[in-house]
Length: 109
Length: 261
Image 1 (cartoon, each protein chain N blue to C red):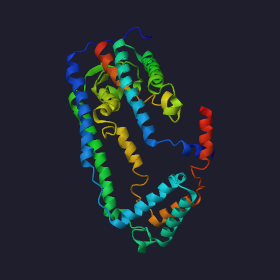
Image 2: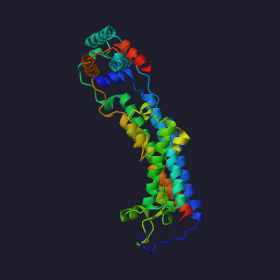
Image 3: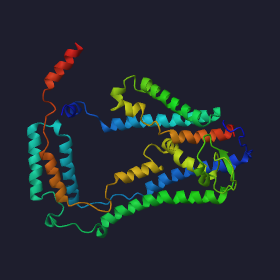
């Protein structure tokens, strides 16, 4: 009951939530493609490539947190952990693999 | 690498210009085509008779009342609730009050329902046709060559699919033919469409499936008896424990100001 009351006083606007999620996912998609370009150019293979991707997304999460969300994830995201830190971790994976394969094929093999 | 003998294949750079690039360009263009096709094929909602609209709107109004009940004072809420309940009891909101309680006709015979189903069919066709066309095109034109090497290993089960048309049994699975590049672009081009067409595009498969899921749990089953829906809404309204949002606002304001001072 207390939670409901709290939500009524500080309502969560669906449009804003969607807008934030969309911004994050756009950033993620773009950076994932760029990471793919980098990984392919560096000639990373199998496991190092995926580690590169996950380190990259972690860094991007940090950057979103410190630059876009102004160090205050609570006021930008309803559930900071799942929306900012862990969310969309795999969303960019396919585009990463795409550009990774392309540039690996162009540069290395 | 554990395997000391790594297979190396020298490929003509022309493979890139004549296979990889065309497939990519075609995939992007198909996505754009699919987007515009589905925008064009969308049927404009048919104009509905006044009674039908009144039925929908009054239900919507009750739902909004339930969702935003904190924003109005207790007396206003009670009054609105009473009016709604009264109206439902008299059947004032129903589109055809005479048919109350009668079972609904078969949705197949209802032309409006057929219209909705046609719209869904069109969406599916706009999705499926380009995909199978392109797959046929790639199979007909580009099968039989190894065009690229994947940067990650795969299990041999993929061999049959990814090396389709390549008749070399011992070739590493990492060497793949053009069909696998097709699959990669199929799944990986989503952000590209997002940047070209904006976020609410119809080009991608994922959004299509999502839209279908949202379209309703039972597109075939049709609507329930509106009278029943209204009665369910009444029950929802009855159980609401109404609390006005301005209750205790002074205390909250003072607490907030006291914290800052």
